[in-house]
Image (cartoon, rainbow, N blue to C red; front, top):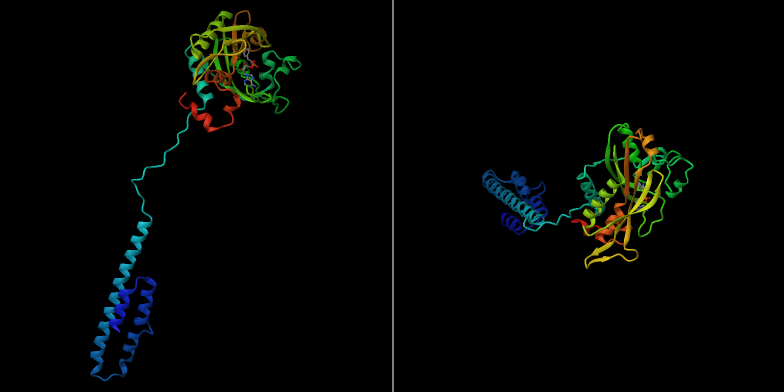
Length: 337
Ligand code: FA5
């Protein structure tokens, strides 16, 4: 029995089989158990001799099974560790870093430029009241100029702001008609424009407002000239054309002498050679009065520019929709702009 059992134990490589071997020899109906049970039938002299042998055999089989059990368990563990091994020397997967959107970069650049000229940066709500978006800017309810900006109304009195100009009125109100104001306000605006290469139904504007006791049109021109030159280069010219906005008088639109630069260098724009980038003017006395300023004491200028178009011009982007369709191939080109 012993020889047979030890041989089988030595040969097996399976836990299950080892278990079966234990049952075959040592179980209730096992062959060695059978021998021990049969002891009663033996003579007095034989009993201790056979008993001793049987016990030794049981011990040696139990021992062998335990040792084999340990070996198999160890082997199984090693196998599992090998399977689950992590190669810490493998290079990691590269972490893809994001970067600022080109419009964010442009807005921050414009902000820095105006902060350097003493302007503070303010914000206003995108969901605006009809009063601040239109009425406080000298656009009464029946004013035909409201047609200029087809709007997304939410209720009769609430709409998505069509420009950043309501922040002018809000800021002047806050300053209570007594302190000078020198601020810019960047933000998103919304119009029911049909999307095309140069129009988007949601775009960015930056408003500028300077109100004080002797602010003149020449101050406006000077500041815009500095802005254009710092933004696009010292070889650029600006020109102001007469225009109309209900909240400024006189009103102008500003063009900049146009050059488009791309990887192959710069070229002068086709057509007139000028491109419009903003609207501006002297704050209308009625707007000053509505906000609580004495128009006989205070004067001011205001402007509103479109950073989307400025970014297009500066970086040679030919379609404004590129800014809003989130194509990473487009966006990542400007991460270090
Ligand atoms: C205004 O919105 C005036 N509030 C600007 C202003 C402020 C004038 C203060 C006087 C004093 P306008 O509608 O022209 O003006 O828009 C200003 C700029 O926004 C434009 O020059 C253009 O750069 C940009 N813009 C207008 N519509 C769109 C559009 N659909 N998509 C992208 N940019 C646009």
